[in-house]
Length: 299
Ligand code: GDP
Picture 1 (cartoon, helix red, strand yellow):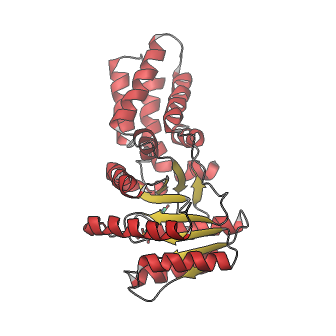
Picture 2: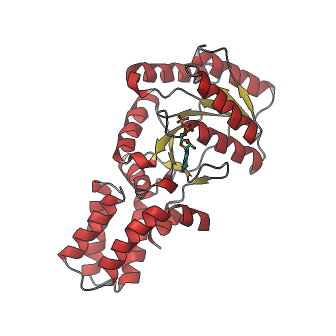
Picture 3: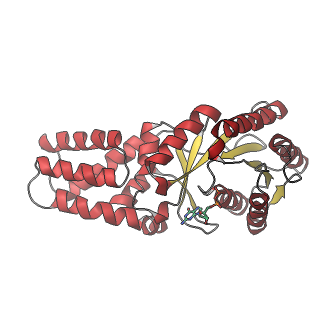
């Protein structure tokens, strides 16, 4: 929690100053709620989510249930956490092997995240991991993934340059099963300027995986760059509709004052945020806990 709080510093500082100024000082009036709304919108909590939360807080304050800045700000954290709770925020690791497809637009931190995830599964949970480099379009992407594989101590399966992404996914699963891997993580392409082609390619990779293993992929995780704000919400919506995203990995939360985006995605898209990236090191990947997250933002 300390690390999370520290890495969420930018968002926290932007938010708490306003929360302090509005909820702790002076009378509660129209201006209080307006300023609070502005602060939450600035932190990218999203217009709809912000309105819901501030209306509820105002109602409870007027009922006389909440007295004092401390009580108000604690309740604010609670309300934010409540909206971000989807009840489905754990990665399902029961199937053996578990196949995780990772999708997301280039630059959002997909490769880095796969490295961190592989490292966590191997080092913290002692699971055996195989990674499939199915972003076959960019040779540099495959090399970068191999470097992360080395750092994480896991095998990376690749094909010849420009080979069919579905074929690489197939090989990775076959190799993973041969070696008795617990988790197989498949990287995919993320060139958004050819949106239709990209969605077709991802759908095809999915189809190949399901044909080989009927209940797979067990998770389709999408990396969303927190610093891109509401644009990230739109990307998540697009991918969600096209390839059935089962969880979001929100990256680069450490570098932004707009960390509220986690709450907006969870509440407005109803896709659980399962993991968050809070730095560039192997260990900078965390499960998303709405309560801790809201607390890290406000206290
Ligand atoms: P990809 O194109 O989606 O595979 O993106 P990369 O994995 O290459 O990441 C793009 C950049 O974002 C790299 O410079 C990463 O170090 C950086 N990055 C990824 N995740 C995080 C994070 O959680 N925090 C920070 N600060 N940087 C990150």
